[in-house]
Image: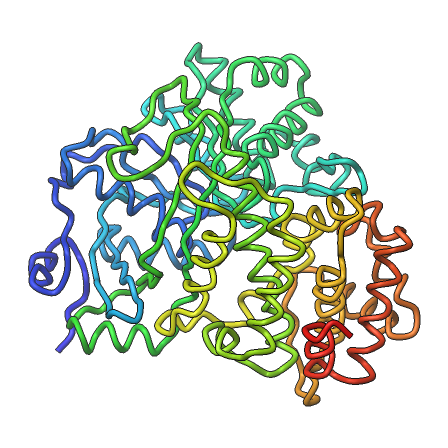
Length: 492
């Protein structure tokens, strides 16, 4: 019979998996993290858990915070488990379960984010970190960056004491620290966006500028926003995985996490308020994250997008099955080698071609059960970060954009809402209604799709890209995904 995870029952699972190797009663908070989803709990929280087990400073425990209504349910479930949860790594060699104890609390979710703002005043909080999804930073390429006119941002500017967004809450927290004469905390993004530290600084100073230019100047001069590159494939947790956890380990966990063994965290060493010594557990501290970030965003994240919409239109459910399909895997390999690898840097410890091979191996992991639908989600937020910059660079250098144009056409065809077999595609993007309307209209006028300035910026009107996109989209509607992919692979 399975046992519910808690501090009281923790020792029962010692034989089944690794337990926190430290005294959790001595753990105190030093990090406030917003967005306690699966990725954070498989990544940052695991690194800290391992550091504590090595005798690391126990003043760097994590306080969780959320901004969405669903976060309240997560908080209740984790509270019932004394903030403990399990992480199970899976690959072809088997599975390995551990119980993570680095989370010390989870703040109540409230209108105006009052608990979060109050916690930020505590001088013990020296880092505020974020995982709020790629599309959650209020950036609009058509406006050159931060969208200060967004209604959420305007609401935060108009009502500083009742912020709508996490960025408004952070500004309020920094204002309170300044008023109290306390040094500011470091703000650390853990989201998969290019130059995430710079982007976070732009949003936060933008909100502050609208409220109080003197505060904005103080933030710009005193608050650190280190850039970071994070990586670990962490699929959604379904009922089958929960049942397997109970069967294999006798463990009932309301919020279990499953992930691949691979993980990576590259971080700029810019923490004026101090930081945990995470290099002891494999975090790479560097002066410039950009080369690592660029390789990952273009090859791994761009690679996910490359296989996602082709596989989705072919009714392939799982990512590992997509990688076993010669059309999808061939498309990824050919497009990456011809159009992506030429524009990414070599790293001191890995060549671009080796990194591509590592990503292909990870995508093919049969145990993750990662879904194609997950990879297809939020294309409107991900395409401008993972695909469009590569198109821009290839256009500027007069290199091939055939495969990239096909990827974009596949996304458009997917957003039309049916697969090649006629099966309905349920809404799968925060902006689905707009995307669906434009995708259907683009069947007769492809320029309607490319006119989305917040996605494509200036390249939507580039004649070479527009022509290639229109040709592929016409072929997808006429011949189907199978024939179109084979035509690309044959060079016809």
